[in-house]
Length: 427
Image (cartoon, rainbow, N blue to C red; front, side):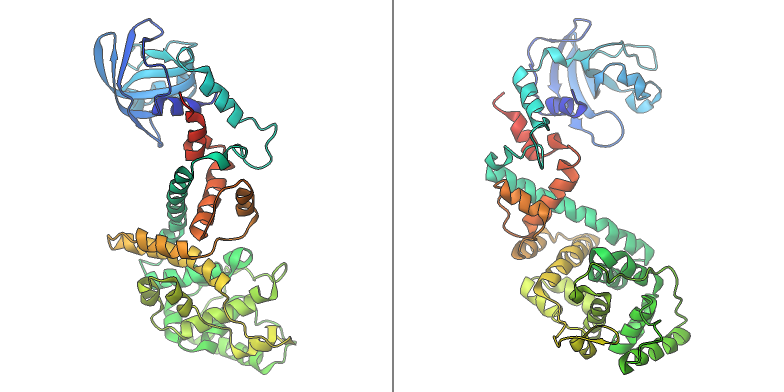
């Protein structure tokens, strides 16, 4: 028995409601089950229950065993003074309030059908599972239920991504342009260099960026210098030497401090993702867009966003991936796939937070944009597709990542609409 199953049974009224009695044989009539509380305190607030002819209004607490009340220290917590019913799977000890009065107890194991227990056992039976608990059943769930759940999950994931936006806002005294710059830097670095690039953003006073943003080489020199990419004395390329000279000048003029920046990695990266290329692309993005933040905020279509990010690295990188070593000529332009990642991980979370800041609702606009982006390709998405879960676009792939990471891995099946549907049955 799991406590989350007890919560599920109580929340969705999956128990025999007739002839309920407490462990002291007092009649129970549940008028209102209460509101599920996911925070600290009793499990269900504002319940109304008639016990032995007396109507009680208050809270309900659920446990596997009655003794868990004491194991969790509720007897000393004033938040539990208003518990009117203790709902347990097994009653092994009487429970009392701080004033010495006994809390009525309902022992659930006598009022739950065997069918729901079997479905629960089947859902969590891992003996023949290779990916997720419901892998043999999820494909049969009504697509309407799945799609509604995926939309809710997308905004749940967006909320999680918003935490970084809010953190950066607090650190920058609500400077939205600086937040955009920091988020772009982090996401230009992708997973491998995201922390390194964020270190550059944190160590760089954004007022410096405002002063030099329209000068590509100046901004490039600062980004490369802070990243520790201008320290090789053996490279004699004129472009490299000019960058070093420019950074030295700006470092002294603007008082730039090189602290707390982890040197970016090249290992395990495809050449187009090398930090040399990505930092140059970012510098050119800012040089070509003097009003980048308002332009991004007011852009509402995917095609227009592609136009904003239609930039390439500086000419030097047409035949280089690293300083001092020539390569086959190719324009290092941002690809549609990379722009999609920037939109998913930077632009939409920023739009979401900025709309809230203004007291507006941008959900429909955000849904329209994310639904226009192709779905992502990764092992989690591929596995769900193999289970016959229809994933059409990036909204679906982002949602499925949230489902897998926040629910499947954590065995939170009873908080998931798929798991709930499988448990509901026809009881």
